[in-house]
Length: 302
Image (tube, rainbow, N blue to C red):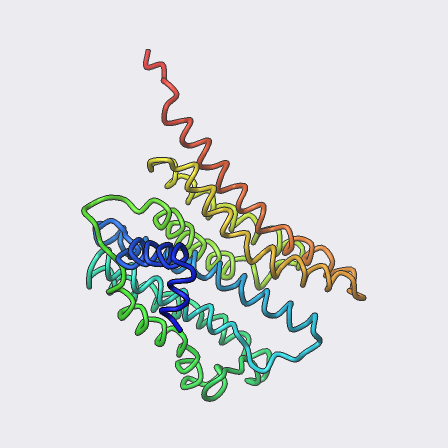
């Protein structure tokens, strides 16, 4: 049957063979980087893949809701698995074992910074919150550790997937570096906001200060972009990818929430939550453009 189809459609067979030759030997290619930048590029890969995975999960949720079908299980662990796998693979391939170890230390620090918030929530909920797919509640030490099972799976997958990435000579992975700078800066400013503002501010003030903190993180990433070749263009790509979950998930869910009966004190925070991501993307681009322009403006030294 195959030979008969080949005789009947020779052009299609030749096109398929050409496609296999062109794509068969191609693998994702990245530049080698120093250990610190390799770890940051790995974080950036995790950030970008997480954005795309969040968008896909959001579309799946919207499709099930349109069909009025219940979600049989939560898909959000897949976002963590995909992001962690991408970060681990890139860090290992671009910077070797030291870069992977640095990324794992970053992940451990991120987990440790979650502990105060989990403790506060568990105290207020009476120890009955944060259910996980496997094991007990996060309000117990064992449950908190078990809740990181998506990270463990992602790290294991990343170590395996790293072999599929081609590492070229020394260079700069601009897209991943900008996204990684944004991810690290966002972790710092959000944790500072949680420690200094979240527990005491009103809902509107908390939302505004969170937006300001995230805009600050985006501005820091824009400064990194301005130092790189084609930084503004690459920053625009990062900003565009960051808007995917906003388009597929945050806008539909936010508009549905506003369409219901909502207490007046929660309307402002909900509107801020809907608008925060495009503002952050705009700050990333503006910071890259302004910083890049400032680098080339001659200064009067007289």
